[in-house]
Length: 68
Image (cartoon, rainbow, N blue to C red; front, top):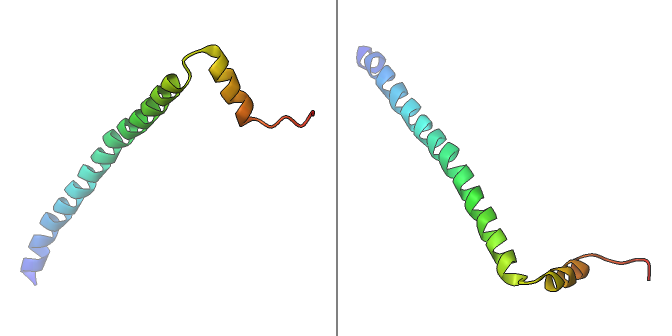
């Protein structure tokens, strides 16, 4: 019984270290992944619309005009 009580703090410390490592991974990796997704989306839009008129045509296709 005493062995279990002595090993318990070591197990809790190992679990806490694992939880901290996962937290650190998500805290640093999450914003980097979001930044990468936003950056690739903006790059795609820049290559898709080279001039003002093509961007206006795309904007008109994206919206409905109920006034007709």
